[in-house]
Length: 175
Image (cartoon, rainbow, N blue to C red; front, side, top):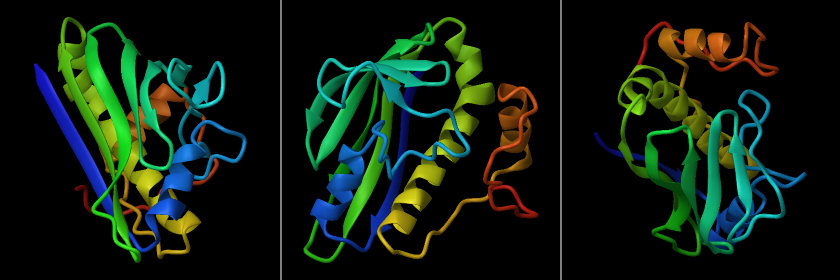
């Protein structure tokens, strides 16, 4: 199964400020990854080509890195995730830019079920939380995307019943 999954957020900040968020990934000063509610992004060394790590059961290696502009990670696990995901600063002006997260992969084997039934929904919520965190870190008004019931249940199951430290925004409607 071919998977292309794209999330974008308009940020009212210079590309340099947004790029600094990207460069902070997996560092002690990480201002982009929503590590309060999702497994932290961790690497075996500072962010750079060849750094290996991931978040939770999702494992990857840094395949390409242009500081302040983009980072691309090649999946190494779970089995059946063949491709990449990454962040990129797009459509920049002096006043704003777009931060994009993109996955391009082939799902094979067990991933043919795990991606559409669970991981895709958790991924979408996690990335939207990261984009909201980027807005907050830049002084923009965050626009959180409420977790649908399915995501709340899957997150609870994946975290073995441990509640997130910062509860997500609630909504009476699913997206």
